[in-house]
Length: 219
Ligand SMILES: Nc1nc2c(ncn2[C@@H]2O[C@H](COP(=O)(O)OP(=O)(O)OP(=O)(O)O)[C@@H](O)[C@H]2O)c(=O)[nH]1
Ligand SMILES: [Mg+2]
Image: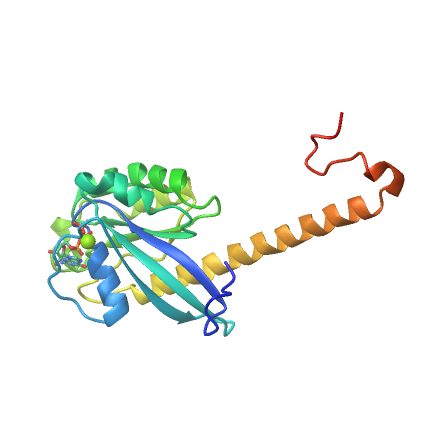
């Protein structure tokens, strides 16, 4: 969406973090926002912060990032906060098979509640665990790629909030993609409204008196 209220940025985009409890959503956000990894308590409900990001084309966008709890207890609150989100980081833990199997649930919630043009980036977190012990891996790269393809997600490779692998890259690539999609949406909207204007400006002025744009007409 265009930023009319904030003169310091060109666009404001709402992004949500989604996925099972304990997959590392809050640590990913903390790593991105503050560049650190510390112990964090499980998220209670929803927390949010904003961060300005400069896109490759020089435009400044403000990301409103909503960190949600993966706990079942807060589900109705968290999914309510998906509304009007144009981007999502869908997170799972590479060392926790269940968190991968639950991705479809989270994706359905996102598609149901968020913006129609939602862009979703998959984050395969805790790669550091797999790196130090290959036996800890519970989801293969082939399975991840299949899920990404089937659900038309963005994916930039395995991540770790702890070792700071692929965190900035995934967030900023998501923002670039959101912006690309939103610009297309705005352009289409502008074209459609121009077409509509042209249609009615060419109409016989005599007949326009009885014609309603909404189609309900007059009786
Ligand atoms: N090894 C490793 N541990 C991580 C990583 N990211 C998070 N953790 C740990 O995983 C646990 C859960 O992290 P959180 O960031 O609180 O997870 P969350 O997804 O926000 O959890 P909820 O808020 O309960 O939904 C904590 O013990 C973190 O220290 C990571 O990249 N590597
Ligand atoms: Mg959390």
